[in-house]
Image (tube, rainbow over all chains, first blue to last red; front, side):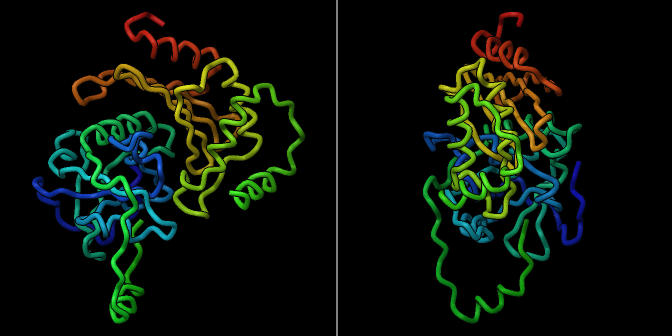
Length: 155
Length: 138
């Protein structure tokens, strides 16, 4: 698997937790926007060096996107672990609210592509559409903006 | 859209002009790679014009009517779905790279999958026949 970086990886997230993945692309949802497409869970080692990014809230799931968002999808941690494919959902101890799925196969590694497609399809099947419309980020107080500017950006 | 289209053609300006053998597929591919909503960021690599031509050539033998086309980090993904079966053709980023992924899905699990590296137009055609009737031996 292509998790190249492991700094800041925390404990396992409890199975009864719902986590969110922000839609950075329109095709993370199906064209009718009533289901999740496998594209939402395609991991690339080049871009997701520590694992696939999720978040504890919908707002946090889209916060890193500079270009806007197309909503968010939700999935239970128990469903991710329940695939029995060795995936681990862990807290990011460096970025509060950021969750990382470890051990995912990568789309950009030829020997992992088949498994990456399979995992993406099975995760998409278990995920639900949390919001099919763009999530508006709440306006931050000036003090919070200054503080968040120093936080590392999740992949 | 115009800025993206311009950058798409400019980055491909060194290629030799090619004959467009399938204008329908070519237009569908250009529409997808020009759609800003399908990119994660403005910095994401875009498929090259050479790749669009190559993909359009290969896709000339199949229908894109029910296909979803999307760029992804310089690749072009074309996906067909029906009856719990998925066929995904991936082109690029290198113009010579073309693979086809077949998947059968049952009860929330991938029951069957196959990745054909170095795929051909004929293999894609047979995969779409399998999509139409997955219990046939194609």
